[in-house]
Image 1 (tube, rainbow, N blue to C red):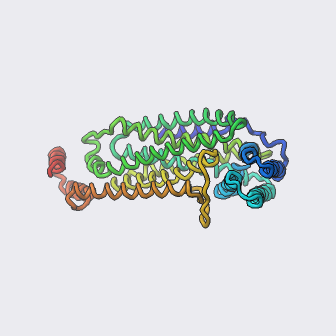
Image 2: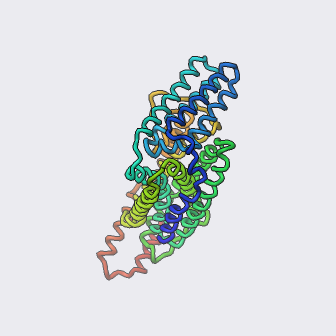
Image 3: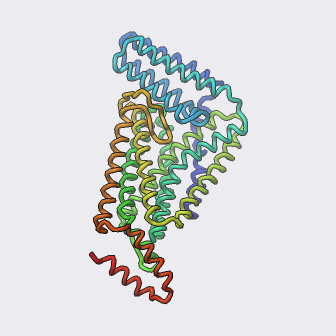
Length: 435
């Protein structure tokens, strides 16, 4: 537990250590000034397209995105003060405009796509500029960032730690804490690298984040399957924990630690960049950023404690199943978000689907490239669960769940206080080995 608190405290300290762009937007007094500059860049892109130079036109749109929308903190300010869904909508409009250019669409279509982009940017600038900076607004923005970015990492790390403790492998939690701490250090290094690369090629940041998330998908899916497969065995292990020492293979522990590493690494680097953007836009209430950050970390600690200790009172099998399903859901969300990052880095194409809105928290975005892999992974998840349930039924000959049998045994043993625990354990082990 102490290590978890140290990890969160370290994250707080590191989140504001790299103000490389703390004054990146100081040359612009308002966000509308930024949009004015972006509009001129976008108009140049259209003129390039009219002259027949589609490649330079697309590159010019990238300049508007990477050198202004992203580098000056416009994107992250929108996410902090408006919503993640709105930022995703604007980001995809950049992609749609570039797609129209790549597809050699009619001039009017390209112009309409670029005009829609400018319109969205102007709406956001008007909303942001219309908000008078106050201590409360800065506090809430800071609180929202750390809670939103840290929540996924806390859920994953907390669930893994609770799993190890509940299955009688508390001594192996050190590997997960170590993975989290290494991830924090790696987050600082990655934030520094991303800041250094931003001026040369902002696409590097998007591609790096996308690849990291897709690797996390593979690990989360593996860990989820592993937890499901151990649910029945864990029920027996839980029944005799403290008496018969159970163990987990080194490979499995590494997978759990690596899952924690990826969760913290991805969220840690992004959190640092978010706070840089928040610092760049706050002139008076810098202390409220620290206050919001501190309160947010307290909230995350409470979430961790609930996952870590309340789970002890939950029956083993439902807990393990619930934990694995949570990781399945996160894996599906990460697929969408990871591919979206690759789309922003121009590494994956964009095929829009009408009638679907972005749901940023679930990684749902209105494109074929994001939704199709999510659908495939969802189908694999369902098939995996069905196969595992059939294995359990086959192993038990279609009888009642093992967890229920264990419950009955426990109740019987509690009633018979005169029974010998060692004899009961031996009988239980023998019963388990019977066909």
